[in-house]
Image (cartoon, rainbow, N blue to C red; front, side, top):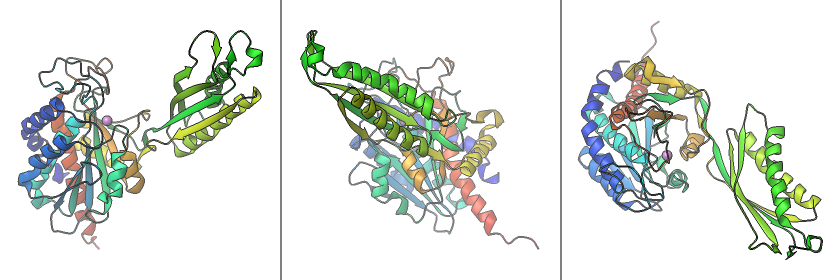
Length: 408
Ligand code: NI
């Protein structure tokens, strides 16, 4: 595609800038919805570009708009900004300087790539029609920052969005490669708390009490039978009880026992089924023993669903930019979750993974996303910069082709 000619070389020329910004953010990670330093760094890095910049109210987001002044598509490009609450255990000379905070999911690279993609697109503004919206989003790690940016009007900031696109870095894919799929790419993530309520007593005389602990244990096992017996194996779900709490000592039967865990699903239908089935199983098992449960569900991110046509189109752009061996279809979704799902519920688009496996490691042995030892191959950011920009340029070129009169 002509729109992509020379793009990878131009992106490679911006790599040093991306690495410098990435290392600065990596050394100074911030958590949650308020990332003032990160926000300042983004605004400063975009300063010379003449974009329309606005900042979030309920979170420290940055929305930057490149308006060519010519009619054409509106493309949204997104980078999340936040780090994770954990110590970093790498030997990097730009490792985190903030105790208990680490960029262990690569969001520092997302910001660095999108900033440079903005530079690249401004340099090619004469080739571009329409509008590009750059969405820099805090609070991806469980805070739902994307949903808050939607409430604050990101999708209406520059007219209707025709296409939304995001890149996520991972060391579990060979460096520089792009992987995505049509349909579900990431799971939903919900949290449950089940309190089994019995009656306390002396541990020597359980018949005078109502012991919640064996009931809670039955619920843990029954929840696994529920998944394998009632959920379609081709539309899978995971129920994990990750925390069990009950009792204080050896000779007291406690009044209550608590089960705390997560539900992952790859379709909205199965997600709803698991919610209903888990509550029914927990309640039923407890009732069978004369106990009751309090069932609490905290809804997390919905299933991340790529538009099938857009995902295929993005893979084709990656193939044209990077070569056929660097662009592949994922055979299955991953069970992690993403709040870009809220954007993809509203507008067609796709999330892709960018391989950033360090060159001295194999993808299967590289410490994965969220590891305290995660390392990323920074040179792969050139591919990410090119792809962010390439998606906007290709969408613009495609729209231009569509407006040409067909030959009679
Ligand atoms: Ni992430």
